[in-house]
Amino acid sequence: MFKRLADAGETVSLKVDGKDIRARLGDTVAGAMLAAGVDRFRTTPVTESPRAPYCLMGVCFDCLVTIDGVGSRQACLVPVREGMSVETQLGKREAGR
Amino acid sequence: MNASELASSYELVVIGGGPAGLAAAALAAKAGVQTVLFDENPGVGGQIYRGITTTPVVNRAILGDDYWAGAALAAEAKASGAAIVNGATVWTLDPNRVVGVSIAGQARMIQAKRVIVATGSMERPFPIPGWTLPGVMTAGAAQTALKAQGLVPTGRTIMAGCGPLLWLLAAQLLRAGAKIEAILDTTPRINWLKAARHVPDFLLSPYRSKGLALLREVKGRVPVIAAHRVEAHGKDKLAEVVFATGAGERRMKADLLLLHQGVVPNVNLAMAAGVAHRWNSRQLCFEPVVDADFSTSVRGIAVAGDGAGIAGGTAAAERGRIAAIAAVEVLKRGASVTNVQTLRQSLAREGMGRAFLDTLYQPAPSFRRPVGDTVACRCEEVTARQVRDTADLGCEGPNQMKAFLRCGMGPCQGRLCGLTVTELIAEQRRSTPEEVGYYRLRPPVKPITLAELASLPKTEAERKAVER
Image (cartoon, rainbow over all chains, first blue to last red):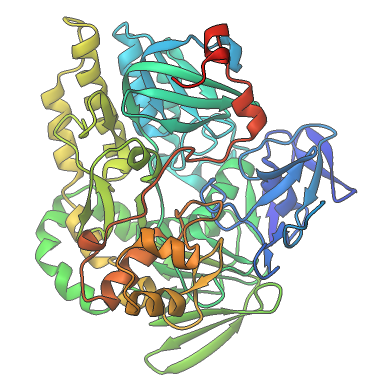
């Protein structure tokens, strides 16, 4: 959906669902994922339909992901850090998960 | 700055680091007021000056002079002596001016003598079939991606909607080398008639020359098609945009659809603090009731910037300064500040073209009040039909609607469905949005973890208290 306009400059690397991606220092997690071609950030708890960022400004909550083990973080508000681990969130809430 | 470095009280807490917040904090701090500014984004600038101190977009022509004007504002705030804290999420503000804030997982409750809420605006919900599909975003989202991270859409990009931001973004994307397949203009034709009486004021306003130049720049390079229905189709992501024109239905393959139909105040924090709001029938949204100093119904709490009703970025900074002067007059009697009358005059000038723009770009009822299976509440996936049927059954307002359908109860806390649900209930019940009202908003207005709550410092007495 998106490409980088400028040379990324200083980069960091992070894992998204176990896959390494490189991001520009200063990116948000959502920006880094979009630039890396991720088009599904989570599925909804109600119908398990796919979602990706809608507003990129902290109001829609469609970009919720798990960051370093903490679930439901707004990817559009969290800056990337070297070695960060991001997981997309799937489906309904299940007991025991 | 981390949470443990914060003082337990400040004379002035400013919430939001856009033009209103930056201008307010700078003015107050320079007058000697002990000021802290909290902003939840990684850097200052708000949405209009997003990434102003860090943007990788080096070619200044792409974002334009109006964007770069924000640099002076950010520099002024930085030099003013105000503590500016980014990555700081304010999740509660109570009528006694206690501010709950979370920074890097640590929460604090801060007592303020005065609070200026400068939480700005957000894009009006655009509930059309398929608006939840990946590949459908707001125009503002694409603009944020460009400003903050230098990201430009690739693939087949279509824009749809109405309003000044749509044209500004189209121009910026074209300058950045993006290709836009089409702009679907949803401005109702009848709005030109309604807006006609506001033309004289508009011609005298600063919007005129800028607006016409943008329209010329974009219309020469992108097909603009008038559309009165727009749908996003696709299975797991956007594949096709279907739209109705005067000459019948058309379809275009698409990878990205950018929607926009104006901006509305982001009311969540002010409403949760108990600030009285009213319906603005020209801008079709709720806004706080404020006086000439942007003071609200709650003592000591002001709302400045677009959060007090949409007036644009330049006006936002002026509103921030006016609100700050009122705070300085209470907190530091006799301190020398800018002449408030001069600010009021430039604010009035700035507002001159507004009636024309508001009336011309008032979105059509069909784009505000969806029908059938179109999703109204994105979080809980409640459809327009469900909301309409429930209103027909006797449900009188959005708060009762929560009990029936859970709409407005997901993570976005009604931000993306509030106006839609209010308008749908009003239409079904032949009432008015004013009468129907809005969701009752309560803290925390942003989700926080139990660990963050548990990190609040407590005295021994508080720990032992059964109740307070």
